Length: 327
Length: 296
Image (cartoon, rainbow over all chains, first blue to last red; front, side):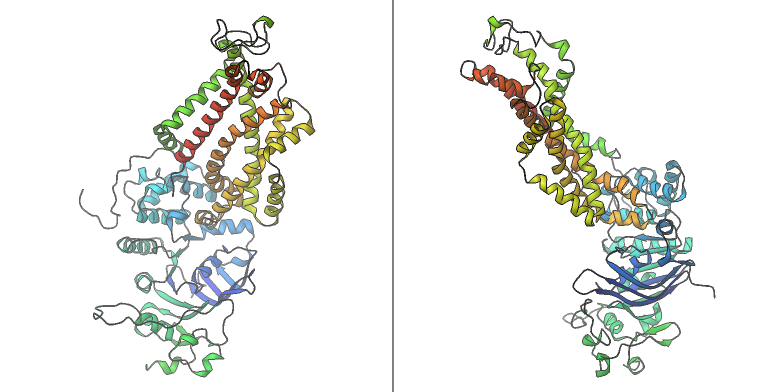
């Protein structure tokens, strides 16, 4: 098979400046092929958004130490200079933000914002950029697109704004779309529409999508593969159906059990994962999940688990992975 | 259409306002009665200053020693005459020229320099911000009146020097406001979104920072016009600004102060003009502030 579109090896990101560095990402490997959707699943502070920003080198350069290799479309992202980076952002890789109300500039109309991005990247006139914006608005199914081009972000509803945000992200025909919890700020009925739209666009345009979410339902809905992150590491990754049917890491098992699936008996308590995530400024030795893990053994406190393949494409970081299959 | 189409968000498809930003500001401003009246007064003052030579009833420079300090309503002197027998109405009309010049020019200069400094400091952050903003803090240590007087005194009397010293006085507060708004805007998601779509640093400042920052700074600057007029009047009063016989409200207040017991109403007229002008500018800038503040 050819080289994957996105290839990340041993990515670590630490934020300096505090009394001790905050190790937000600790060795993430991921691979993504064209036309594939990958969901990064994890709770707050598990490093999923930081990973996403590292792909675009958006983390503040002075205060962040990034190690490892990132290759996108054959380019070494870490080695790009400023000019190349500007070309790379938006054109190869682009991003949909969590809160479209904040990520769109309030003093410009949506048409202006999209036309600006197109004009800068492709060196065409603003009129040309506006034409592209209109096409995109039709594509993301904004009703009466012509008129909405002249609307300001505050004149649109949340779902409509997110559609416009997606149009903006697609304006320069990127190959990879990064989506940072694009549905978290929306209400439930609009969420599913945005997810369907993203999936449809991804199929039509052959985009590769990396989708960050903390909602396992959303991840299942959109992704081909899921990576579960915990304390800056991918603890389990695999095809959606494998993860759902045969979760192998205790954290994934816990996450799946803690959903309110089907008919929860009245009065029945939701299963939870006890405790809270570790302090990233001083990570414990061994498996970071060990303190909260009901299957932890003594060895878990001292040995950091290495990735183990349990079946084709499903990789787990857990010392007891073989033993837990039966549980 | 009561049908909910799937795939399209349920929202009214009619948005009546597809007007530009400034058009909507103007629409809201028009509804604000106080601001509109203040605006009309400001406009009238500007017209008065521009067309002064054509509307004055008498020569503001030639006096009649026999008709000094006439009360308001004397025949031929609708607003009385000053200590040299010059027509007060004409002098007040002419005075608008100098006073508006002294009120507006320093603010424009300070707006240009101060907001550039503040935006650059706010956007770059780091050591440049520290040096620029701490230097500006030094200027804050002096009360503005004292600073203006000290600077003008050091530079010597005269119109240009007064304008320069007033500009210097207004740079720090404008830079401070510009810096704080820019710091806020810099961390907004849409600036990061612009970076994420590959916009060069200069474009981000030009388009996204300036677009969001100039409004608040502008409103703040308009509120300084009245302060500037009062300070300018103060400088003239001390003999540091405009020189006689040039009519300027502050200077007129100064020369008429000896007449405060004999003709208190006439002596109070220049002060009333300063008051009316500054309150109009203030009310207008208040109205502008609320008309421009629509988002969030």
